[in-house]
Figure (cartoon, rainbow, N blue to C red):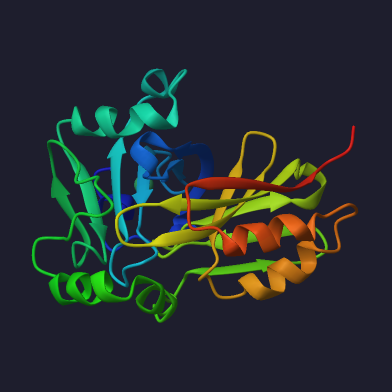
Length: 242
Ligand SMILES: [Zn+2]
């Protein structure tokens, strides 16, 4: 594994099998915890991905080498602490302006924290007109959602793809997160042990809504309520029967 490309940034998501651990909702930060297994050398990476949809360059990820023991019983909320305790990890993303560097110590987690150099002008603009600023945010290159007859997938701006088969879909929720500057709108598609967290700003989300509306018993009123919401709220739109 010494020469494996999972140790040399930039990383390619196609090199990994990914397994979602779920979403860390501590302090409303919605960090996505994922176990990535390198298809080449078998190394196990614990990945933590965070972004603030209100900012164009807010995507940040951390990944550290872990053992099976460290993953046993691990909850998403424990991931930042585990990574911070490792001898080193990789970090990267648009927030840091790097495709991957080695680091150690506590993770930068506050989703409202401007990164060291960027976003200062975005912050002052946003304070004036947060809705307008949020809706003008361009989707990042890989921030896309798609579906076919078998299932739905979401590729986030760290190029990680999460998939969920329609047959495993249990619940559809809209989550409006509330923080200082923006109200964000996410689809949460819950499956068996998997959650796809899809921002409304993702490319393809309009088509996703049209597809979800075909689910028997889909609650359009919940969507309308969510669109009018500015608070920290969850709206259940659909639940599998039985
Ligand atoms: Zn590897």
